[in-house]
Image 1: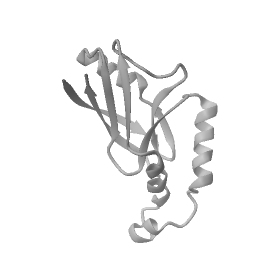
Image 2 (image 1 turned 30 degrees about the vertical axis):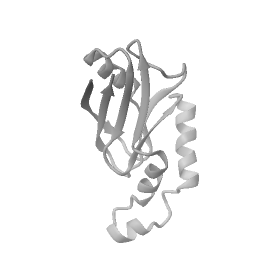
Image 3 (image 1 turned 30 degrees about the horizontal axis):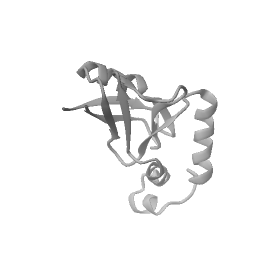
Image 4 (image 1 turned 45 degrees about the vertical axis):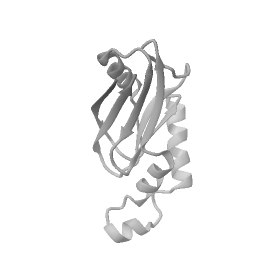
Length: 137
């Protein structure tokens, strides 16, 4: 059986990191799945998904990492073409990717003790993100 739903998430942009773990677990619970996998997908080209230990130090480390490898203050060809100033956002999002697949068993996500599912919004403005949750089990 497969069930698909969406979750709307308000973000602040500029490398805002949002913990989705509880919302994803709630979707599994809502549909009564016992075992399977959940595909999480963020629509859009300036956000990505990953797993991290969601704590303030690592949040800061991740933001600083992306600023070092893809600086926001640089010139990007995308900015020259579109004038929206978010070329860095697209490049950063391409490094994370828009999807993540996580197994679950006994109705619980099989994440590590300190592992959470997070959305990282790289855009240069606030957004409302639509996250697709597709559960197979």
